[in-house]
Image (cartoon, one colour):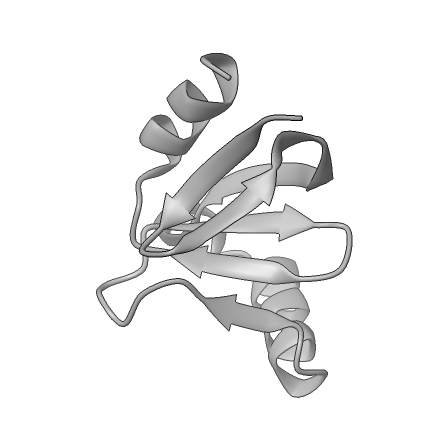
Length: 80
């Protein structure tokens, strides 16, 4: 099984990643903001870094907020 590094000391199995999204481009949508707020309220958000977030990664059970760009994460997924 292959891991994908999300930032700092956080990695996920490639098979557990449902989607990778640019936080700046998607968070302008009301539905995405509501989803992220609901995830936060339910304790299902994990911050990979305290730096400025660039992406969020959906897994089966959690949403990861990362300072790694979407493009970099996708390259890591393709190269695993």
